[in-house]
Image 1: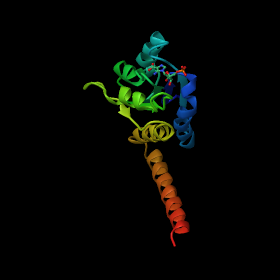
Image 2: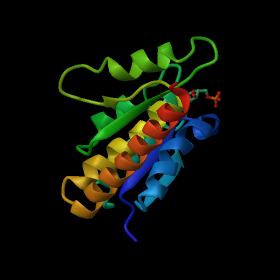
Image 3: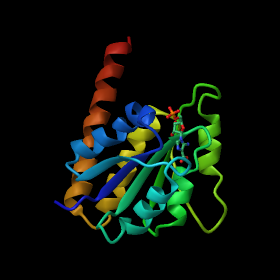
Image 4: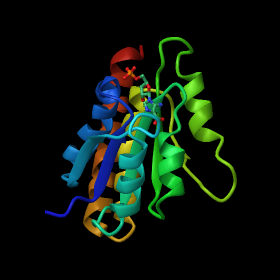
Length: 163
Ligand SMILES: Nc1c(C(=O)O)ncn1[C@@H]1O[C@H](COP(=O)(O)O)[C@@H](O)[C@H]1O
C-alpha cells in the first residue's frame, strides 16, 4: 500500500503527542508512516526526506516538534506537499516557543499550524484527512459521519448536564 501521509517528529519524546495524529489516520484507514527526523540533529536526513516525499507518493506531511521547532518550516521549504505543523508542548515555555517557531513562517513558504499539544496533533490528523478528501468522496463521507457522531455525543452529554 502506498503511504499517503508522513508523520514526522523531531524526537522520540514527541511521540506521545504525535500519536494523536496517527490515531486519526488509523481511524480513517489512511496509510501513513511515522519517523523521527530532525532539522537540527539529522539535517541531511531531513533534506532527503522532504525532497523525496512527493516522488514516494506522499500527499501530506504532518511535522511535530518542540522548542526551537524548525522542522515543519524546513521541510516545507524543501517540498511542494502541504505541511501541517504541530507545536509540541515544551517543558520550559509550555509550547509557546514551539508555536511561534512554527506559525511565523515568512511569506512564500506556508506551514498549516495547528494548536499546541495533543488536541493540535489530533486536528493535524483530521486536517490531513480533509486534504486527502478533496479528491476522495468516500473519505469526505467518513468525515461527515464522524462529525455527526460527535455532535450526537455533545447533545447527549448536554442533556445529562442540563436541568
Ligand atoms: N525542535 C526540534 C527539532 C527540529 O526542529 O528539527 N529537532 C528536535 N527538536 C525538539 O527538541 C525537543 C526535545 O528533544 P529531546 O527530548 O530529544 O531532548 C523535542 O520536542 C523535539 O521536537
